[in-house]
Image (cartoon, rainbow, N blue to C red; front, side):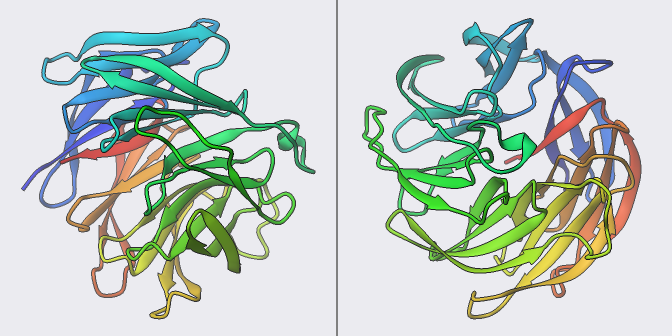
Length: 338
């Protein structure tokens, strides 16, 4: 069996945009190929229709562009570009045929309706506020997705908030319900348990993982645990978070401590326990992902231009290194195609 991956990157140095590669049945990466020349596609989402929605930076302008993945290289079919910084996150809502973007620099959430191979803007929401740390000078939306009960959830690193919205079929947002973390937590990404009753919130600025109760758009804090050792005093920024395919383990990446932290979820989902820290064999691992069958994990190191692959022990959840020297320039996003 072979797995197909897409890598999103910065294009500040050697990268030309979006790359494709393959992971063999023994967990080794091979055959890197540039499939679309895009300006710093640091995040993207792929729809069931085979359209890819990518962050796109064009000089001093930014936004999202649409790509048909049925051609090689991919073909651009639309772009929604405006003055200012490009977004940090893109998500496709298949049920309502919407695309959400979250802009870190401006604190803006934007909603688009999918119209064939094009996008039509339907609404946006500007968050306001700040937090106690230097990186929290204003609102910084870092994540947009769906809750298990089909609300829009957005994570704001700058204001220490998780926002949930009702969203209409035609892409209009309600006023948000706000959950506030501890001051300086700097939330970045969130994931949900299989039954939708728990959420796992990763704090970039605090290097902490919080376990939350979730119901009808509202969150309640249960517990918090560090993603790094207590004696680590140098800079660290927690980045990506994924769950195992059986929803028993949580994986998070640390940029600075340069590791993947592995946590076991208690059977009653009221606690998590750190069970492993394993190096990513490079510097600044912003993203990683897990194969659809849960067998392998691939992490990318932005500053050292390399990807590492690991076998996942399905019994213990722990990782074992397979490969550490696969070249991917400026990589910051890993996606396994179904």
